[in-house]
Image (cartoon, rainbow, N blue to C red; front, side):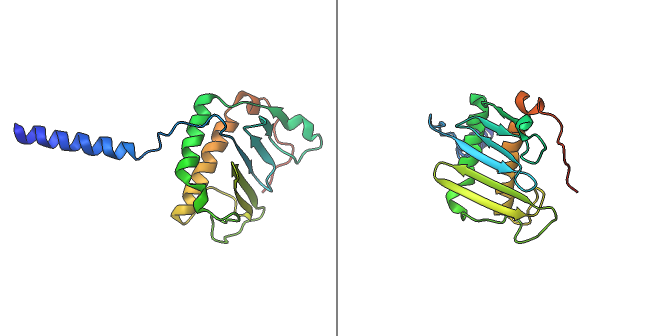
Length: 164
């Protein structure tokens, strides 16, 4: 019986220690970020100005512009993802696909504070063949999913132009 209790205490201690490595730091009040993404970088969100742009490639681009404030919970989750990413470990100009190309290409620009990661004319998609690139793409995709799930995004008209 003592052996079982010892094992349970060990497992519980290990589990709590493992969980504590996840970022639990509170989001600073002045946290903000911006993200440019999509084919040629046509979509944009800035959490500080609450600017939301579905596409800049339209006959009437003003139809695809709005303001949107993410919930406190969404901002907390995004802050945790960006913190786990460790943006300082990435160069300012970065290609998560190691020079693999596609046509059309996409542009991703993630900015948080004074750190910016610029990925211009990179391969379309969110699957990298290296761990660091995948972590970056997972973080970007997480943010995109939060933004595009909002009521404001859903109320935009359908894209006018599609890319193959």
